Image 1: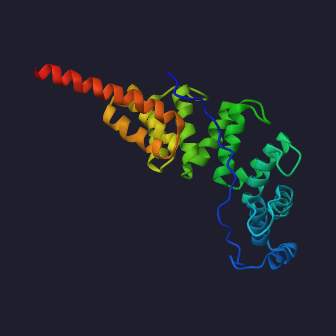
Image 2: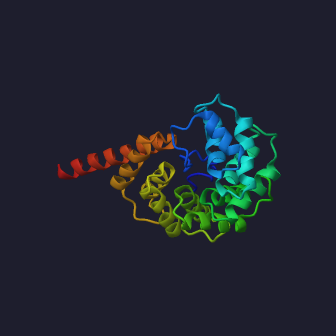
Length: 244
């Protein structure tokens, strides 16, 4: 029984910058300070160009400023620039460069970069497939509380990828991600309750978690919820017949 393969979520980091300039800084002033080497301004400028916030959206200029920040050792910039190289967005697509940048960020302890690097090893993108290395980086990320890594680490245990198959350990990690509100984790936990995999079968709890994932628009949760509701309805009918 396998609920899903690890999909990988190479998400762009667009959390608000901690730049000292603040939201009211004029674009020209922000650019000047970035050109003077202010790291926080370089990061903010890169994010704004990527999002089209205060500037016309320009992935090439975003990559330029992430490169400047990455050259100063910013793990956040290295991670984002790696994402751009992987996608070929604003820069020529280069898998090896993407992996190198992601590794630099991951080695600095950047949780999302650690997760991304783990997924590269799962999928063999820019590196040979290596579940051992994948587990190393997914676990480092999960240990920092990064919900996607927790969920995918659980799926590795479910599928026996890089580790001995262990549904109880799969449930443990997936539950952690679900309790943090990660939709895929909520779906996976509902799946485990539905099948009784690594956990006692419980349709009520399966329904609870599938509904949480549905509210976030997780597509597979809708089909699972239909199956769960069918089981619940069948159970109600059987109870009614026994009373008669």
